[in-house]
Amino acid sequence: MHSLASARAVPARFAWTTEASMAVLVAVWLLALAWLRPLSDPDEGRYAVAALQMLRSGDWVTPALNGLPFFHKPPLYYWLAATGFQVAGVHEWVARLPSLLGAWLAAMSLLVLLKRYASLSVAVAAAVVLVTMPYTYMAAQYANMDMLLAGCLTACICSAAIATLKARQATGRIRGMAWMGWLAAAGVWAGLGFLAKGLIALVLPGMVWALWLVWERRWRQWWLPLHAAAWLPVLLIAGPWVWMAQARHSGFFHYFFVTQHFQRYTGSSFNNPQPWWFYVAVLALAALPWTGWALAAGWRSWRRKAVAGSLPPQAAQPLVQSLDRLMLVWFAVIVLFFSVPHSKIVGYVLPALPPLAYAVVRLVQAAGWQRWGR
Image 1 (cartoon, rainbow, N blue to C red):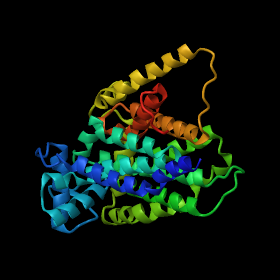
Image 2: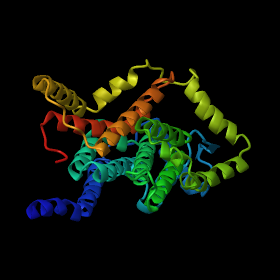
Image 3: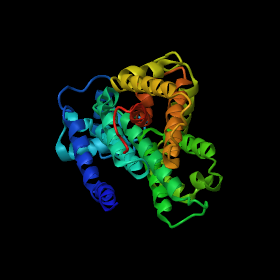
Image 4: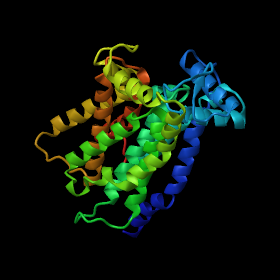
């Protein structure tokens, strides 16, 4: 008994070492080839030039391209890239740093959530799967807002999930105040996500969180997404830029919120029309070989259950069941939300990759190929 307890204590004692090592290794992995190719047109060149113009003009409120206001997207990418240019010089890899940061943030957020409520081995495996997906790696080295948004969304959803799980005891009562810190962290990431790409950073985590609470029947916690601790950071982080942009440009509200949000989502006049199944194909192909391995593991798991016949299934731990439901809702919300509009761009569903990485690990675990989580 003593040796078993000691064996279980070792991973917990050195968990911080694993997290620190993963943080460094993921950063090095993502950065390794970011300098290799020139910026591509039109997106990478356009956004990098806008960031450079912001640095040279000193106007950190109004993104500009060729001397004209460029409010297609909020300014977080430009702020990060312009700061990078100022510190490290004007290089291709510096223009890609915001995307690299988004991918790193997504991997580390997933690691933190799963280490707490699954196991350290599952957390590390899921993070590795995520950053070795070609989809993730290419998006992390592409200078635009998509991966930065995906990182903020992942951090927001993971923080909200930790806040929810911390806020409930077996009796359903609120304990301590740690949950409020995680709730505020979710608000911070939502606010930064808004500055990365707009209202979508509030809508999608809110949908995931609300549907997960309903599925879990966490009626005592329905108020968490409405708590001031979650919304105050959003207002403090995103509010000043919105107010200053409108003060300088009287048509900002209509162009930014109506044209670039609602009309872009509901209209058919924007570019890249694709069929409804477009993102299913993109995820299946761009996340190879992991999607192929997941399908093979799922088939093996089904065959094992068929052979077992009437044997009673092994009961899953309640926290693992909660994570399974969260990840399923998370994946479905992202894919379905972006499958509705006529216009579809590959990078839109990047926030679906963290739950997909988790699903790969769970399927392989269920197939018995690896002893992840034990």
